[in-house]
Amino acid sequence: MHQDNPAQRIEALVRPSVRRLPLYDPGADPRQLGTPTVTKLSNCENPLGMSPAAAAMLAQQGGAGLARYPDPTGRALRQLIGGHLDVDPARLILGNGSENILELLCLALLDPQDRVVTQQPCFSLHESLPLMMGATVDKVPLNPDFSVNLHAWNTALKQPAKLLMLSTPCNPVGTALSSAELTALIAAAHPDTLLVIDEAYFEFVEDGADALAILGAQSRPWIILRTFSKAYGLAGLRIGYGIASHPSLIDALHRVRTPYNVNQAAQEVAKAAWLDPHHVKRSREFVASERRRLTEGLQAAGFRVAPSQANFLFIDTACNALEVVDELLKDGIIVKAWREPGYSGFIRVSLGLAHENQAFLASLQRAVTALAG
Ligand SMILES: *Cc1c(COP(=O)(O)O)cnc(C)c1O
Image (cartoon, rainbow, N blue to C red; front, side, top):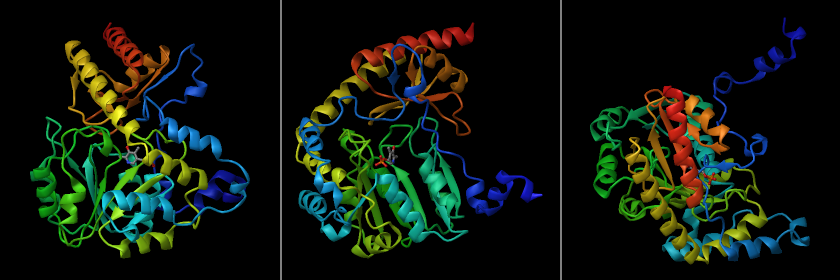
C-alpha cells in the first residue's frame, strides 16, 4: 500500500512522537496579506527596532569575513555578557535564538517518558520540544486572575520531573513572577529537577523577581534563557543566550548542537547591541507607556486584560478568538489567537507604535461589534 502513496511512505519513516506534533503557529504572513497597510502585532518584536549602533554594525557585515566559519562558541560575546552579569563565561552559551537553546536542553536531557512540567497557557515550544523527544508534558493551570497557582504547582511537583519550564514574564499572559512566587516554586521542585526559566522579555520588566540572583543562591541545577530578539530588536538575526548554574550543563548542550549554530553577523551585531543599553532603556520606557495606554483603552472598552510586564497584552475578547483574528486581518492587523483549552476567546497582541496600537483598538472594537451583530 505504501508503494503507491509517497506521503504515506514518508509518514511511516517519521518518528511517532514527531508525527503527532503540531506545527508552530507564527500568525498570518504579512507578505501575503494584500491589504494596503499591514500592522504586524503577532510576534512580540521591538516596535522601535534595533539600536542605531547595531544597525551600523550590521551594515559592516557581509564582506570577505563571512567566507570563514564563525567562532563556534562566541567567546567575545560570552566574555562581554559574563563581565556585565558577573558570571563566568564558561556558564554561558549562545544559541540561534534562545529557542535553539530550549531545543538543545531537550536533546541533551530528555529520554522518552521523562516528565516535563510547564504552565497553561504556555509558550508552544515549552510543550512541543519535550513532546518531540517522547517526553510527557504536564501543564499547570493559572489562577483565574492570571497569577501563578502555587497550590497546583505544589501538587504537580510532588511527582518526579526532569525539567520545569516556565517563562517570566509569561508568554502569552505577560505576568512576571514575584520573588515570593519564584522562591515558592523553587522550594516545591525536587532538587534534581532542572529549572528552565525563560526570560525572553526580561528587559521589559518593571517589577518582578531577580531570577539570576535568586537562582544563583541555590545549589540545584538551573538555566536562565534570554534573547536579543525582543528588547534588542534583533529577531531576524537569531541570537540568544543561556546562563547556567554550572559549566557542566553548558558542556552537555555543546555536545548536541551543530558546531556553528550562531552565525558571525549575529555575534558581531549582538555585541554592538549589548554595548548600547540606552536603546534598551528607551524601548522599555516606550513599551511601558504604550502598555499602560492600550491597557486603559481596552479596559474602558470593556475588555478584560491580563496585567502585563512584557511588550504584549493577553486579551479576553469574549468572542471566538479565531473569528476576531480574521476580522482584524480585514484591517491589515495581525495578532495571534490563543489555541489552548480555556483560552479560546483570548488573543495576544504585541505592542506596536502608538498609531498601530490605536488602530488595533479601533479594529478590535469594530470586530467584536461585527461578530456580536
Ligand atoms: C520569543 C520567545 C523566545 C524565543 O526567542 P528567540 O528569538 O528564539 O531568541 C523564547 N521564549 C519565549 C517565551 C518567547 O516568547
